[in-house]
Length: 162
Image (cartoon, rainbow, N blue to C red; front, side, top):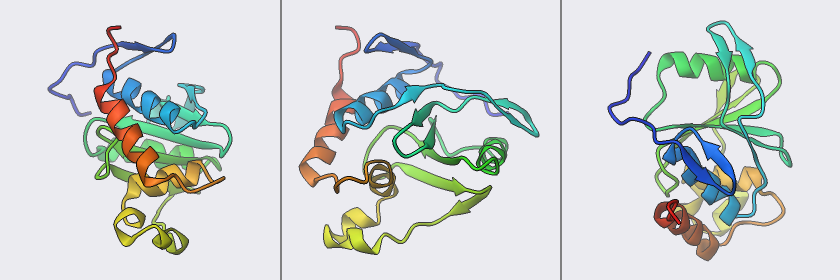
């Protein structure tokens, strides 16, 4: 089990208290992009015990787990176990930004998306895992560059104290 140097700060956003400021920033990010979600919706059984993913995105039936750093092997095993229960799940490491490390799991295995039709935006965006994540979750239209940057900025600068 990994112990992080930084203590999580419970943070409230839109009347929901998140276990950490990082999770709250992801909630701001999803909200800014108008991606509906529920927070900590269900506990799943894994071979290493119970597991409570952070977000459920009902429109696409994807779970999203937020981690401050690259996930440990134990965390990956839990996610694989949840995924093997016919639930798609992505792990994001760090705050929402262009370089956020993102791992996708489908049917118990890590998958790698080659989004050729997103290449129309630019190779720069299509090769960014967090952009792939957002477009997997918001399939009605490609998220425009302006909206994407706005969501990054809003999540980073949101004043939770107001």
